[in-house]
Length: 259
Image (cartoon, rainbow, N blue to C red):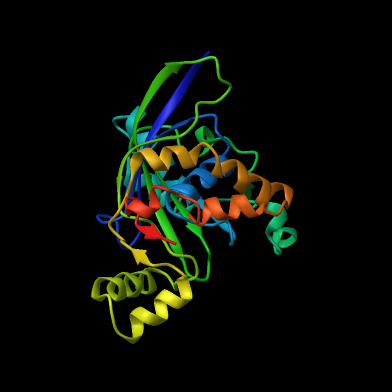
């Protein structure tokens, strides 16, 4: 079976040169599946709502310019002033308390394939997680290629990356940097407070292990799907896996955290 594979560069907004991933994923993957993979890659623990946003207006203009060399952008903007600002949001609509009044403004992340959101090299989208802390992952399609496999879907695979990811409920980028700074100092009131709060012995914001992450991608996205789409609580062993409480690699500091 032939599959179309998208190659993405995904970066944590605000720390884009310090925490990022480059990964391949099947075009036919539902956007919810892309979300669960991203959450795994960036150490998000399925504790908050999420969504994708795509600037469809800009994508439309880019497509028109690509296929029509003489396309008059200024004239189009004059005749259709609202098009360039058009955005589409993809969410788990049954978890949205305002769904009844927002119907028609958002698409269902659980049923929409990735290829319906973006379809060409250079196109971008944004993934948002925890609307309070405001974690944002910026995604850009870097390449598209074909592959042959008997599998129904090709599992997402990280090719390279940098940096640990986020810390749940840290308060966004500022809080994450405070945690990293406290561990870099290794002593003091802030360090002791962070150590008690996170219940960890070591934290390295710059650590990342590609091999370990791909092993986690084999298991954790399916757990997240059950949590969000089937309202199933994770088992104790699954929580330990998600929180890295049973990772032999974590004890070597390669993943950035030691419990």
